[in-house]
Length: 317
Length: 285
Image 1 (tube, chains in turn red, brown):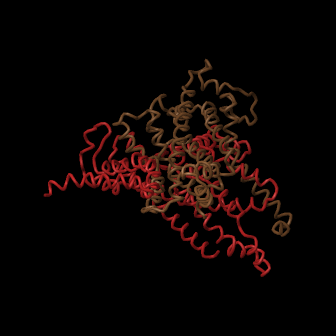
Image 2: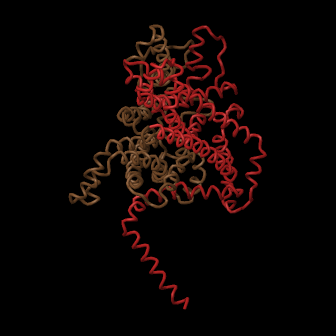
Image 3: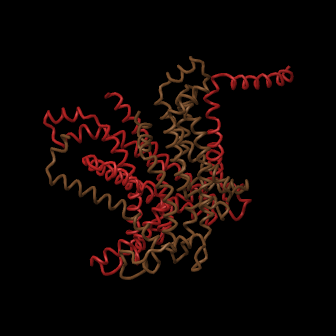
């Protein structure tokens, strides 16, 4: 009996699938099919490969090691490796510091520009300037400007008589970290400023007028009306930004490439060094997984804040 | 209006000063690079510093295209063509595929919709540099490493989620009634889409396309690992040709930087109006 029903049920199943794809219910799935195939091939499958690789001792120079399962050894070694923890901690600090400073500076800039009535459009266009720059160009630009012998910054300080010895912006560990943070902030503050300015322009005028009539001072108006209204915009900007925090890799790659002596090493630069230069792909993929989780954590954190702020806004309207 | 009258003159000047300082910081570094692209190398290395260019030159650009006898030219023309081909192709395909997806999310209710949307957005959070490791392994085995095709496919995956997000927002802004009315008047669903909804969403699609183009044009982390030779190297990867271990060709790099910026500059100015709208309403509403 079973042997006869099996071949019968297969065409039945195929017909069912065929019928589904001809029914109107299938339309959204068909529309999404190409997108799903691309993401599957270029993101999902590679992620599975990289997940597998992170449990092997895969070395680029020895292809056979791709199937040499070593369990959690890569992860264990990473967790016991001081260089990795420095890079991880530095990346976390780097992202936290830059995102917060970008948000504060962007808010400040948006508030200032909002006060200017003449030429606002031109100012907004100028603000877009850093957004057109490829991160690799931002890195090159600041590598040049912070260069100790021919850079713009040292030349200016020299000619103004403020220094007699060149400041080693990219050679000293602390200063190099300052320089890459400066470059990152230069690159991304505009995104915050532009989005928050859009928020300020959409700000309803009535509650502000009412608050002023009731005797609120400018600080109180900002704290109780402007800021709560801006919160969703702040979180959108944060979410958008946290999506591509790893852009900083391009910039650091060209500016210091992790140096001097690993003092600006971020998880992303350490990962490529381990994978491509030292050929330890298994180890690099383990690191890659940790960096992916870090990125997702930042995005999910801000996205949840955004959803909360949005539902709060919806309730208020 | 009332806000303005509340400020005292000194406050107004303070605001203007603050904005001025911010604008100087935002523009001077870029302008300095552009200036360097048109100066001879001697002037850049001179001590004390030469602030105002004493002689202008196009030699740095000539050098990029092998038109100068001072130094052998780099294959920058080929990099430029590669960048253009890869960015344009992946943009066109990503917009078509992304638009179909965005339309599905905006117009249909179906099982697994929220999960699927989240999955697309999460795929975008994977850092390119982390994704480059497994892609390098797979692309090498498939034999599509160092080909334009390999990079185009990768950029599709980078651009599709964002295109879906943008077009979903744009289509949701167009009332469903319009297409329904057209269908009652005898249009098919397909005709209603092409004649009614597509024209209305066109400006949104244009900005999605420009976003996708700029992302591909500026991308470095993936391209630097998946390309090797002039067969597929793009402009951002080619920029690194100028850095040897201890020497950097500042004027040559600046000239190449100008070549990378010009298309981005033109496109960003074209979309700047849509850019802000596209970014904000998708999230707030």
